[in-house]
Image (cartoon, rainbow, N blue to C red; front, side, top):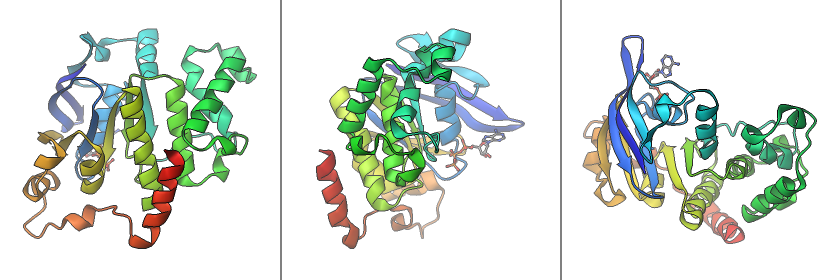
Length: 272
Ligand SMILES: Nc1ncnc2c1ncn2[C@@H]1O[C@H](COP(=O)(O)OP(=O)(O)OP(=O)(O)O)[C@@H](O)[C@H]1O
């Protein structure tokens, strides 16, 4: 259970996140939507302890993760993996080594320096790559892969941590519609099959509606919507995006054009 209680983050006189509270019970897939600058990234980064909160509490099974320091904070970061828009892989390093870096927080520095990975970890990394449909890429440099493949490597690296929670900050914002669908399908599978909570910042309404159990809408640092995809009406979307009566949902769409839909279906079958 995750309880975010009255969390605020100030930058100077301005609140990037302003008294945000919500509770997630169980392994839900939660989407956070809102326009650029609404505070979505700052909120996720506070959950992961990449950014400090100014005030508030984030309780995980009753324990305030914002109060953790040193090794305890790092241990929490291990249980709450983060996925970024730009993948954050080491481009010149091979795929399997990138995935193995997911175990860094529980490894000795010297062993890491010399890339001495335990055989069990290597086999696990290969298993995870296989599960995500990219095992044949294992020996390639990360930079040689497509964006969608790189994001799946980043997801594989996150899974190496065996996290309870996966935080994804705009995971598909740099991808074309077909790769975006493959990556979102992958996150959903991990959520459903493994029972891991996923909280994803998403730019687009249609993605939130399609993949999430619950959608949180942020505007100017505050939550202005919290409900199911069904409740996310055009009017609610207008409130979130601060748009006028001329608001057009299609403008936030990542729908797959007809000519690439068949490719996407094929990719989906490969993943299944
Ligand atoms: N390190 C920082 N220093 C100063 N201001 C910041 C910093 N990080 C974020 N902000 C400000 O906080 C507000 C919220 O930013 P944040 O990145 O969380 O929004 P977002 O909803 O994730 O937007 P985007 O989708 O563009 O990333 C913005 O006004 C931003 O300029």
